[in-house]
Length: 431
Image (cartoon, rainbow, N blue to C red; front, side, top):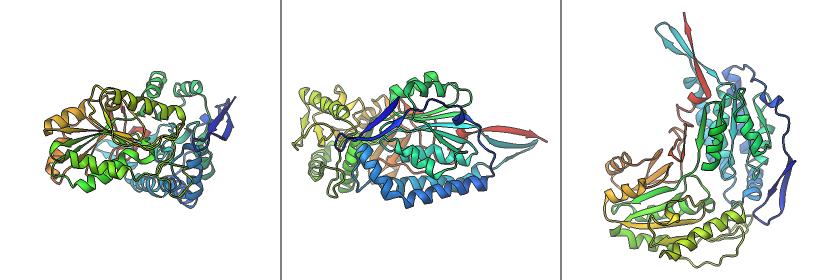
């Protein structure tokens, strides 16, 4: 059997690969390498990827549709930053822990099965691939069928002893996560996919399953800064980001001005062929994904929401951005993950109302608070059910902080000094 990658740019077949049928060689135990050698392997990976960033960006644009002006930065910025941070932490985080009776050693779990998504395939993969190798494991990698060349790029830059990949069917993925030779599973994808992985797995796992991330704009916020960043957080990558902004709550005192500025800025987006330099909004990953968003918007409008943009919708994968007001939590567009270039904006009359609405969600990945008062941001953040609280920033993660979610956004942790804990197990030496 073979898998085909249909480019959202023009609907053509961009790649076709045979599905892996024999997994035995891929499940061989990892070699025992000194930390210095594992660090050198990961440093070489980052250096090689940076040199290939333009070519990787071109492949990404063709596979999933993000404009070419942005795709190389997935490597040059996020990937490189996260990888180098985890490399810098490795000696400290993987060192033996002295104890009164001896010491505790962090030993590798064996094979780490990384199942990566298509929307940010390198950014999501680096969270587990690099720390897993640094910790002494081997990685078995499954790229999305939409972005299969990601696996092949990794394989070309890493020794096969520490990195293997499979183009696997969903059925074979579920068999693999149940295999006792797998030591840990890292999955990024849909809630439904995560639940299926969790039901089948026989080993520890980490799940990142998306979000419906909120923002709260207080009356004292720097409005220009908030608008610029929140519009970008909602629309970048055609809204196809797990931690993208999908709902905004604005203090009524500045609500009208916020909406006016947000609409004006969103009108500047250029929807079109992502290989053209002027394009700032490319196609969504497939027509069905765009149609799902269209249905959410149409349903909200039928329920009384107001659409503020009237850009021509060319149909198919190409979906223009939209800002909705007059929305409420009875509408799917404010409660169900949209994963498209659409955001709903609601006025609020108090901090307590904003907190209640932000927590009224099945998800909890990130939440952003926009205010000049850091003490207020901390006070509000303590009351929000989320994995990460951002102050005057959104759609971003710092590799020095734990990347984690609550509720249907998943469980487990990546990055930071905690990022190696799931990829190792403690072994005590009593001397």
